[in-house]
Image (cartoon, rainbow, N blue to C red):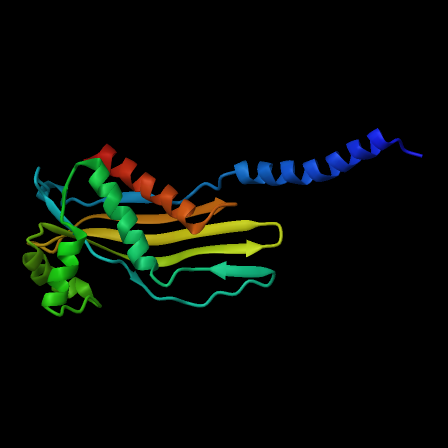
Length: 201
């Protein structure tokens, strides 16, 4: 018969090995497909360029997992745009218009932000902005299954010059976080955004 000490040792191994396995998987960070693309219109930028960051568009679509549950916030567009706004502020490359002022002006003028591109000039003038950052969230979700946790963040963004309607840059984010929440995946994308802005402007 096995001694009590040996039984305890086997029991400890039984519990520790799965934990080490999960930690090892969690340390493997998927390579994201996130990039910033500059246009030829970056010459439109100047030192005090004022940017208004609007809530990104997001059309919620129900997702199903066969072995777990899916979390995807209904206000994904607002969440992503706030992260992007904070990163832009952190770069100190632009003057960022206060979000509360944007909401107030939009509410006062009863502006409809759907199909916004055609009204960039009007909205930009009301906000006294030089450029407007708009975007679309394709996916912001966390899939929780029995022995796995995987989060995905996919969105696009573009900075549009108010006076000319020209696109200054576009940004596409596609990031994953293993054993992390959708906020972890979003953080990876937004930090890369900040890094690219600091490197290129």
